[in-house]
Length: 103
Image (cartoon, rainbow, N blue to C red; front, side):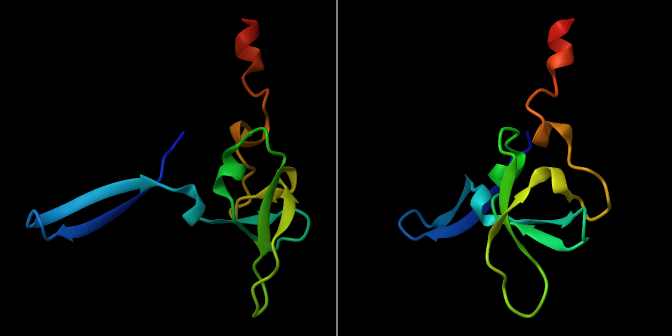
C-alpha cells in the first residue's frame, strides 16, 4: 500500500533552527475518476474509502458546471480511471487473493 505524506517546515525560535515534520493524512487528497456509463468526471472525496476493498461505494461529487456539486455515493464498479482503465482488483474485490490460499 502506498502512503502519502504532508511535509511541513517551521522555524523553531527557541532552538534557532528549522524543524521538519511529516503527517499522513488521506483526507486532504482527492482523485478524479470517470463514470463508465456517462463519462462524467467524479471527484473522489475519501481516498481511504477508494482503497478499502470492503467498501463497495465511495463518496464523491460530479465535476461539471460552474458550481460545486453536492457529494453523493458512487459504486466502485461504475468508476474507471480517466484513461479508461478499470480500478485495480485489490481496491474492489475482497477475494482477489483467494486463489493463492487454495494452493
